[in-house]
Image (tube, rainbow, N blue to C red):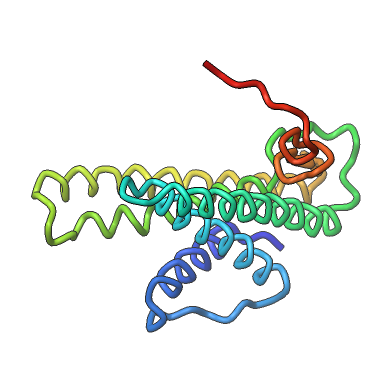
Length: 199
């Protein structure tokens, strides 16, 4: 079910396509590909909302709206990571209890690949930015080399983990994120408890 290098390619194509609709995007092969793209889209939208939140010229009201959007997108991102892990656990349901437990789930690794795809895309853009210096281009070429290496390493680790899971040599659990900030029963600001002022 997991083809780590296919996942990275899918994320790259989607990133390019969502920035420029003329860029090629292969159709998802199956429901799992659709889930990967849905999770990547949450990261894509989150990335660009976070850019907007850093605009020093933005009005306070605009920043507040962006922050609320970021919270919702981050919740969606984490929910989709859990859905990815649930889908994978269904496939690997016979994991032997005695197999060593892997601390990071495949879904979390796929989330990291998604973020790396965005970093690769935007760093590559910086290598050819017309209003930037030669030094800026060179620094970003160096960063791009590191990011590509990190993504290749992570893809290989994900592929190896999945092979070991299917062989019964390693197992993983669903780790719920249990986010509190969007839950009106858990966030003191939402349920009316006075907050502590820092200062």
